[in-house]
Length: 168
Image (spheres, helix red, strand yellow):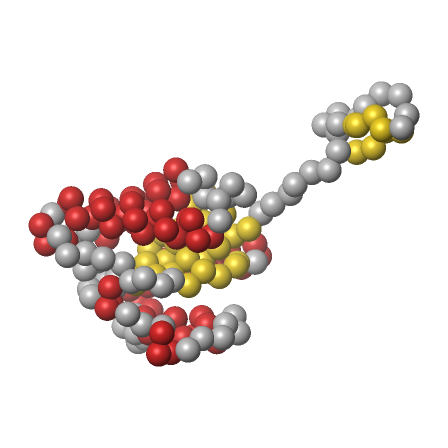
């Protein structure tokens, strides 16, 4: 019997069985702010920062789809690699970008990210909506603060939280 192309078989007790596959496609929307929401992300640095954040994601095999934000926070939409946990993605993105931004100019010497973050799954059918949302952060934040934005995300996703520990 000829094997179909692309399938592997295991012979067990003279039977052929399909070898199981691990299939994975998880889009995530990552959101975090600067420490105490200080407006470090100015016109001088923002495009470089978005590019750098995308590069860190790419280096972690988490394909960046859209990166952007506002003066006190960032949004990253990426395809999560099956080789990395969400927590490790966040840790590396924040650690590497924080070290990098401090080397760009002395005005960023006291730059820090907040300790916390929000990470939300994204339905593939909603990718265009999230991309547009991230691209329109400047306009969006003329009307809404980061705090209100994050609270809206938490409510939309039914995330339980204690606001006493939400902000640093």
